[in-house]
Image (cartoon, rainbow, N blue to C red; front, side, top):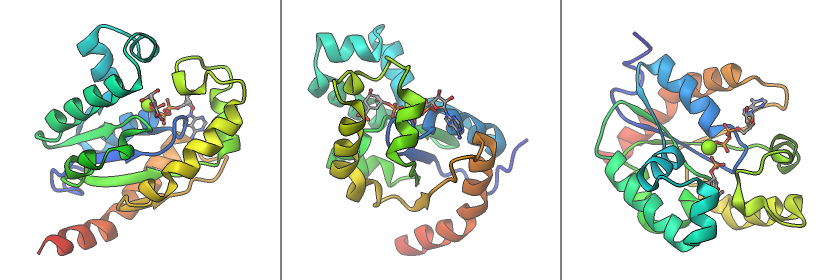
Length: 185
Ligand SMILES: Nc1ncnc2c1ncn2[C@@H]1O[C@H](COP(=O)(O)OP(=O)(O)O)[C@@H](O)[C@H]1O
Ligand SMILES: O=C(O)C1=C[C@@H](OP(=O)(O)O)[C@@H](O)[C@H](O)C1
Ligand SMILES: [Mg+2]
């Protein structure tokens, strides 16, 4: 049994740039909350029976975003889930209507660190670019104000382990949850 009362069954959504640790930390948070774990990219891969790279290459980003919205709209109907999203989920306004059913946490990690984590990783189609660090910078410039709409903004230190970051999230939840529930009353 985890710290299951902390969120009162409300879903937790992790948002942020690719490489921020959403998938890694979402799993830890799910275990600690006694919640189920969902990664929207993994659901998309299961549904389509294709990798994210294949979907981008064969169908394009617009189709990927349509599937992503459909998956999110279905996932948000459940409770007691920690949901790791893909970095671009914040781009569509419609997605926010689903995200806001839950508590949204932005993992804000500097571009240099994202790059060092993903330099050897070829599973992020948007980074298959001659200038991946420049690409990360421009994506973050486009998205920063959207990520900032999250309920909770976590800026881990470079040496923080995934467990330490999960602990920071859990520690910060009570204060933001109060504000979130209060804003609905
Ligand atoms: N706190 C951390 N410290 C070091 N490496 C990390 C940390 N969080 C994630 N990673 C590594 O960074 C890479 C990207 O993490 P991932 O969870 O897939 O991020 P995202 O889902 O946000 O793209 C993975 O190789 C993961 O092991
Ligand atoms: O930032 C993005 O637009 C994307 C992030 C990826 O997920 P992660 O954020 O888990 O890497 C994945 O959804 C896809 O490659 C697009
Ligand atoms: Mg991920």
